[in-house]
Amino acid sequence: MNMKKKLLYLAAGTAVVCVVILLFFRTSVYTGILKRGAGILMPFIYGAVIAYLLCPVSAWIERGSMKLLKGFGERHTNLVRLLSVLAAVLLFLVLLILLLVLVLPEVSASITALIAKLPQAMAGFEDWVANLDQGSMSHELVVQIQNAAETLSGYVSGFLESDLQPAIQSVLKDVSSSIQGLLGVIKNFGLGCIAAIYLMISREKFLHQAKLLVYAVFPEKTAEWIEREVKLTDWMFSGFVQGKILDSFVIGVICFVFMVLTGLPDAMLISVIVGVTNVIPFFGPYLGAIPSALLLLMRSPVQCLIFVVFIIVLQQFDGNVLGPAILGDRLGISAFWIMFSIIVFGALWGLPGMLVGAPVFAVLYDLAGKSIFTGLKKKGLDGMAQEYEARFGSKAPEKDRGGRKRKKKAERGGDA
Image (cartoon, rainbow, N blue to C red; front, side, top):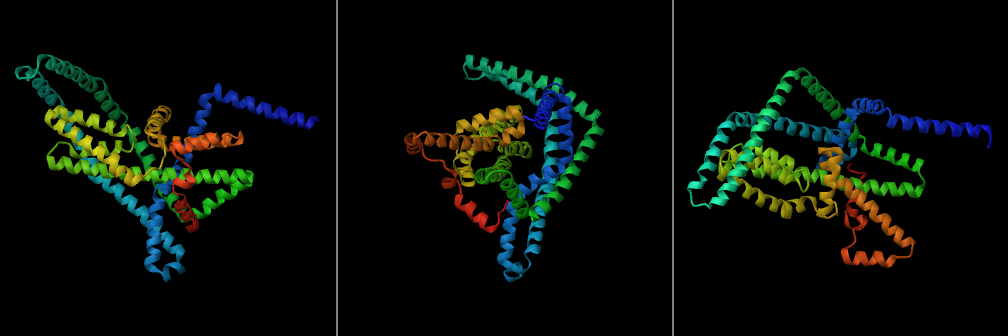
């Protein structure tokens, strides 16, 4: 080995040692660099997320405009694309503004009124529990209800004294930093909308550039495999995220209409809680129903019971009718793996992990399945793979997960 190669290996080894030291002994420096880089790129991250969500809307408007305008649209495709993108972004901003103007004031008013009435509601609830023994209910059951009520009262009192009040005081003290953070979010969101417009206008060009880069860096078979897996990932994520948002919006609206018609209090606040938490698969309905039921329990046990029965019926409707109609079988994994993915990715990434954990795990599950089947075939154990497919069904994405739709997308140039 000549001196040049020795120096090259020495430099590479030194670089690896430096990276290890940076990762394990200077973690704050490393995380600081990452945080700084993420802060600089945040507008583009916002833009990529907005573009990914709005590309189907823009493509739908563009196809409708091309059919409507016919000859004119074919001669002015760039103008139709620009107007379609602007229309999609404008629609998104209008819906967001309506949400902020109509929903947030109602939610804020409900929270303020609830905090003001909570001590009185707790006293009334405790009186109701104390008078249970005077009715026909068994004494043992009454004692259990009273013990549960005492525990609940202790939790609520502790929350008011040790959590809520200090949190409000902290927010009031740090109002300047809160405003600064809000202005930063508004700035990143505004720049993100501009970046999203550019991304959606030239989406085919950016996608083709990424494809050229992959084929230039990797061998052809590897590049083809990466392209297939990226298409599968896009199909899973786009359908799941967009479908789940639509599904949760419909659930929130149904909940609001029911609560208004039945006269249940805090309709807007509880409907927002139910709709937002419904975005989280599996655990979402429970995460939204439990605090909402407790809020109603403080006012009236009868109203709480009505709400709980309604939520059970609503979630059955969502799980068996509405959800499958909107989402279909996008993920192709069982309820157990959905629960597993939400717990694991929720522990790793918090709330964002709970939101995207299921589709991320579905992609990993698909990759693992393909690797296992490929390994079995290389060892001549095709019979085991065929037996599994015959017994449990094949989950090949090219056959069962929208391959024809992706082919039509590719012929149109892609929608996302």
